[in-house]
Amino acid sequence: MEERMAKEVEKRVEEGVATGTAILIAVAVTFVISLIVFKFVWAWVVPDLFPGAVAQGLISGNLTWFATLKLAVLVAVLSGFGPALDEAFKVRP
Image 1 (cartoon, rainbow, N blue to C red):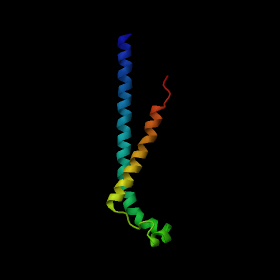
Image 2 (cartoon, rainbow, N blue to C red):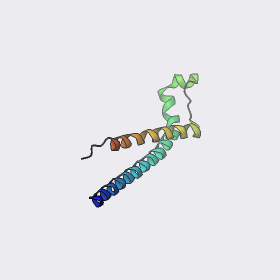
Image 3 (cartoon, rainbow, N blue to C red):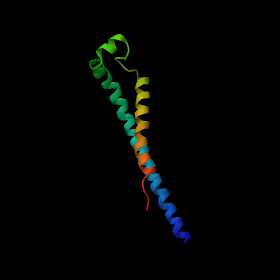
Image 4 (cartoon, rainbow, N blue to C red):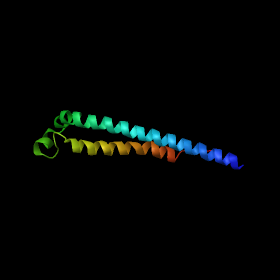
């Protein structure tokens, strides 16, 4: 009985570590992609979509690297919540 419980605990720990690793990798990939997309697409798209707001100074036509970094961190962290919540609320038999 005790051995069976130990194996079950070990199995759940391994599943948790694998899931955590997958989530961290997904967050890192999302961060890199978001960083590139925000930096290089912002100056091309935002002035076309919001020309009046850019002209009035309400929205920046260009993002600094620091602002891009902050947006990429936000998107990456938010992207990690989906898989984490799916795993947390997964029904176990």
